[in-house]
Length: 119
Image (cartoon, rainbow, N blue to C red; front, side, top):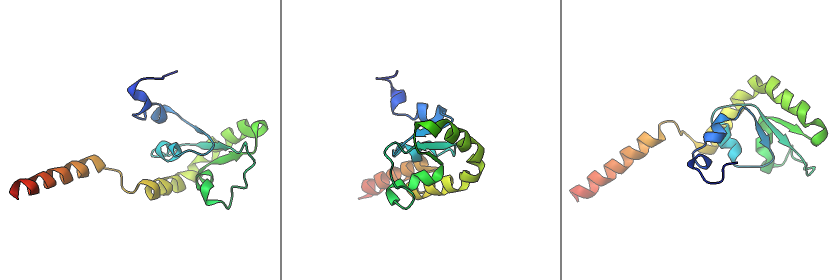
């Protein structure tokens, strides 16, 4: 268990995982920056299909309880090729164009500094 390293914050563990298994978390979209199988556990019996708070659950498979979670995990891997497009679209909607963001941010900072030096 890691309680204190930078790996808790730099997505080392998230990037290393081959499956997301959980309920509701904003980490889902961070995990899906590289589309991968996802499975959710509906442990509280939520009526999730038409609830926008559970939009992420449409990006993978949903187990209704502990009795079928292993089958749902297997299905998440089997059906993953069908989910790649919707996962990629969901990440784009959540984060926008994040590719090259560091370069764009550095350029914006440099331009701002140049502007303030001219003034």
